[in-house]
Image 1 (tube, rainbow, N blue to C red):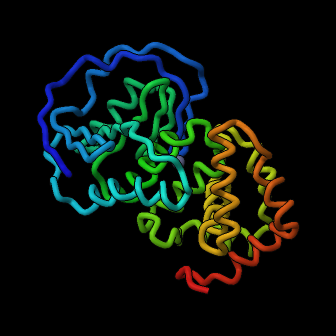
Image 2: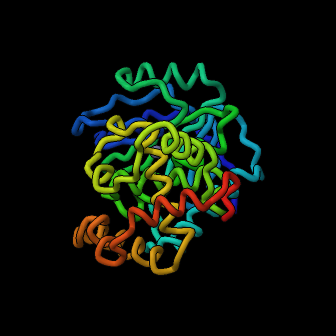
Length: 278
Ligand SMILES: [Zn+2]
């Protein structure tokens, strides 16, 4: 159900700011106070269940992308066997890149320039971006982070990014990400690149991730969700462990279940064509 509301600009967003990530951004510092973010685009808003989209322009209420974003939460919860969460994810959507980058430069001056990013505070899950050519990809990626963090607040970085890459292209229908596939195939052909989950698991901040790391994270997510039920079940069990703060690191879990998992993920990459079909 979509409800449209108009909001006045509110200076109510003073809060402590902790962790963050996305589209390559990760706030490494601990908590720090924020002054009221007066540049936020809150002239209007759409409420789609637990997804609240604020913008500085009138959004098309029945836009397919917005409906897909709302549907993604149920899809992701089912696929990953996550408990339902009613924690809201707030999206702040600027009409133009100029407004967005002006906001970024004032609010997060040390952040690298990105088209979109996700921020998790101690009480809120927020996405910032602008309405541009990549809006579908960017929103799906960042809102996916929001949904994941609502259910698994301490989700490890490699699978957090892998799943966001999985859901960013076709809303997770197939999880096929052609640009990441191309990157991996090129790396395999030009260098000695090999999948290395243990190395990925050691990355805890997004600024540590290379483009190839994002691509490999996507490959692991695709391998786990699009090959066998037992691999998907292993991922579901792992995410449940992450929620409870128990269990092994994933590379150890999968090694016990499937000793040749590294060879198998590479085989999965090589046997799948550029269109995502084996
Ligand atoms: Zn991300």
